[in-house]
Amino acid sequence: MRPAVVAASLAIALAGLAAAATPAGAEAAASWRLEQPTPPGSSWPISLGSVGDIEFLEGAANRGLLITGGNAPTIEPGVWAYNGVEWHELSNKCGAAKEGRIAWAGPEEFWTVSDGRPGQASESAGGSFERPPELSIDTLCHFAGGQIVGSYAHPSFQADSYQEMHGAACLGPADCWFGGNQLPEPQIGAFHLHWTGSALEAEPYPGEGHAVEDMRSLQGRLYESVRVRPSPEDRVLTESARAPTIHAINPAGLTPTFEPEEELPVYERNELARALGFMHLSAADGDLWAAAGPREEPGQVTVAIREGGSWRQLIGPEHPLGPILPAGQAAEEAQLLAGEAKHATVAAIAAEPGTGSAWVALEAPTHNASERKPERAVLVRVSSEGQVLEEQTLPSSSEQAEGVGPKGAAARLTCPQANDCWLATTEGWLFHLAPELERTLAKDQDPSFAGVITYRPPDQGLPQVPPDAPPPDTSGLLEEGFIPTGTIAEAHTPALESRVTLPLLSHLHSRIIKGSTLELRFHLAVKARLRLVAKRRSQVVAATSMLTFEAGSRRLLLRLDPRRWPTKLSLRSHALAPLPTVSSVTGEGANVTTVTTRLFVLPRTLLQGGSGQLP
Image: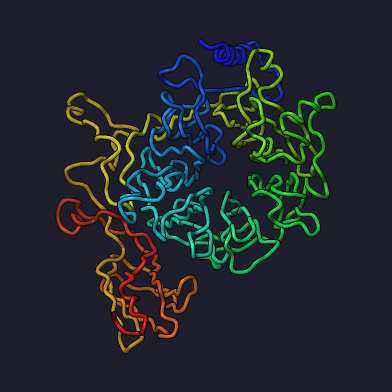
């Protein structure tokens, strides 16, 4: 066994012995300690691999999730769950090697932004590509009731391909948003997907191609932060030195969908928005916290808070961050952060509920990464008044004395309750903040978070590919008296006959009548709202209002201008009732392979004439 691994194992064992030796009733302050799970097949704790996100169900410190890219051969890419006592593998599907995300939609329901599968390239242009398809964090997995109930993707190298997604959050089971990189040229906007409870709709943020990097829910709205880069890196309709760095997303049914937040009080006079990196977000106690590090001069570590609808700067140009470690450790601070603390990179922020404070993770600027030695995590706790309440380097000095070596810089932070926070490092190690007598909680017994989910259904939106795993062998289960629980009785397990969901739209036919009027005929499976939009490149040249149609065969009429003939037609739809299901073996269901999303791009052949007549 390697000395470093032995030391880590001994440190964890010593922490348990110290907790056991504490007298009953004694009060101990919360402290950070290494708490790394020992996975099956290993005799000691090992790295979980790159942890893209770590999130807890609101108000439930014993129900947490993390998503990882894995650490072969022991740790598979997938999702792990925390039950108040230990972390364990929940799914060996839907992991993310880069920066996966997790969004809770309900007590037993959540989404992950995950890596794609090779099938995303099967319908791409041509048989050979100048570059391989990017399959990182560009698909979605929907977990509910202890299984993966949906997987969503789109073929690569197309105008409406899914882009990398960095932000995910939900207001409820039927209102989830996912945001990411800017749309491919020549489109202008940031990529977004909206889950309405029955379908995913592409709803890009218009006019600004600033990539979405983080999302948080707060008091019935979502807030997203964007990374502002100068043109032409980011394509925008109107140049602005102070582009909004945070947008609000209203709940379904409220307009407008997006509202830019007022200018944050975080910049120096004449300082450009791009001087800072994107704002990491965290919400607690009705407040929204935001923190960013410098991207270019004169940017510096900046922390702000949104209270009662208005923003206030806590740390930044007006209140700069000074040295954070004691005076005798100035050299150590300069080594860990590659210079002054105010010029460090912000890796994460986590508001600690009930304390009026937040933990901020700092690391050395990325351009110095090749010059750094093995790292330790650096944290500071900031009050809502802008005071640095405490600092922490991990492993702590006591852990280092026990032989615990560097475990990487801070990467992900979350605080499910007061005196209870979790940190994931860049090397895939977990640290836990808790009082010594409260390091474990009442064990979560929900069967939806027990066992290992091993089946991921085919991606909706892609040609069907063979499943990830063979169906479970259920022969003889009843004879053995087996009672299905957890993930055994999966709705998506392949069978001789199953049910598939019919698309909302089918039997689409279009033609030009009277020289310049488009007639679109279609069949609706259920009552729905529709809007037909015509664009010439990125400009809308004609559109209908949002209209409500009953189920059945219907038609839409749209008057076009022959002088501004569209190059793209799209039909936006929103089902107003659950979509029906039919047998996958017989009847109409035998030909259903995907579920149509709410954005239907009409065939380009209709538009090739360009003269107001059918081609």
